[in-house]
Image 1 (cartoon, protein in one colour):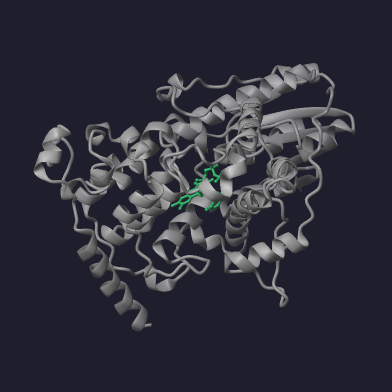
Image 2: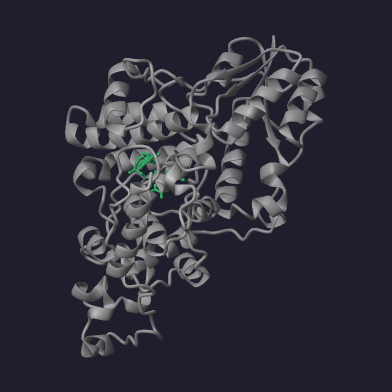
Amino acid sequence: MRTLVWFRGKDLRISDHGPLCEAACHGEVIGLFVLDPYFFAPERARELPHRMQFLLESIAALQSNLEQLGSGLVLARGKSIEVVPRLARRWRVDKVLAQRWTEPFARKRDAIVAERLHVPFELHEGETLAVPEEVRTGEGKSYSVFTPFARAHRAVVRVGSPLRAPKTLPPLPDDIRADKATLPSLESLGIAHNPRLLAGGERAARERLRRFLASAAERYDAERDRLDLASTSRLSADLKFGTLSIRTVWTAARRALERTNPKAWRSFSNELLWREFTHAVLWNNPNLLKHPRRAEFETFPWEPNEPGWRAWCEGKTGYPIVDASARQLLGEGFVHNRARMISASFLVKDLLIDYRRGEAHYMKYLTDGDWAQNNAGWQWSAGCGFDAQPYFRVFNPIDQGRKFDPTGGYVRRWIPEIARLPDKHLHAPWEAPAAVLRAAGITLGETYPNPIVNHASARNRFLAIAQGRMSAR
Ligand code: FAD
């Protein structure tokens, strides 16, 4: 039996990899990664610089891990819907295995590949803990609110032990080695290496998991919202690219926390269940990537507000917590969850800019940019998506800053020009007396911008428009 294991961008690992383990038990294994121009054409790759860096590092690590097992990873260029069926025929494989994806475009891709293949194409689970349709209401419907979804998920889904990586693999057949393309370098794609990004690859991912469980995990329930502390796992890119499986993270965290620190386990597992929820929601509602769930928001009178858009993207709105998150995104391809919520609320509700522009900007710069989670995060923040988040909740950037960045460590790191302000004034520099500003070396409007909108009036404006639309339904 000769099996083609088609690795895609969400399962870049050898541990707990269903297709690889199954193939390894049944004879010859050919690992394949397709460098599809959809992501790897230079003009496309430049649209996702941080993800591309992490992806290339993770593919290289997978290649080396497979080589250490005695096999290798074959790279091929071209559109996957053409390349996979062609190579499967040329290499006379008996079947093709891969991990299932949730996104509508990926489901379409897989349906085309299945139709074109001359052999069976089997999709394994692994992207989420639950299989699609597994978590349903008593009436067999999908959930639209997180809390009952999470309750049902905990009751229904049984999470087994992760699969061990194969100890060895048979060498790649000689006729196949000849097909090897090489991995493009970041430079050849026109992307500058960013040393502030997390390192890609399975080993780095395992080390991140180990470090988190040995330190911040035990305080996760109390500190996860703190922007000024290293309080969260930073595993989102690993879960997105599959350098760790969700099952590995779930079982390791459960083992480390469930008995000794049940509150921390509950809180951390809840976030993993948010991830499950976003994937379930997208699976059941594939239109979400294009349209808001609440129809009233489809024709919302969004404003182009180009100056506001530029200020938000560049971290120059004059609201330190919003600006710190924008600069963190550009600087290290990551934003803390609390800062994502504050920043998204500000774009949509204070600046009246279509949430889809913010969503696309995040997809461009987040290393963990994931279609299901990012879309759900934006629709939740805008108040137009699933879950019970009401549209009339508007985050106050000053209060949020004071509460979740109480030492100012987050703002000072990303906005050094106001770092010398005392904590009291850090989240609202325009309220500081002139003498305090002078002593901190700040001239508002020059050193750091004045606020581009007045939050209280912007909030009222948004609410008046939104309430008008809701009552007109
Ligand atoms: P931890 O707090 O350590 O959580 C562990 C894991 O749980 C995360 O790695 C992530 O996989 C999952 N998780 C945590 N919070 C959420 C959540 N609210 N929704 C779904 N899953 C969650 N997450 C992404 O992975 N990719 C995205 O593109 C993305 N875009 C977002 C956009 C907006 C506007 C918002 C509000 C949230 C978004 N999130 C996204 C969710 C969340 O912000 C990140 O998962 C989290 O900040 C990652 O940091 P961490 O790994 O340290 O999280």
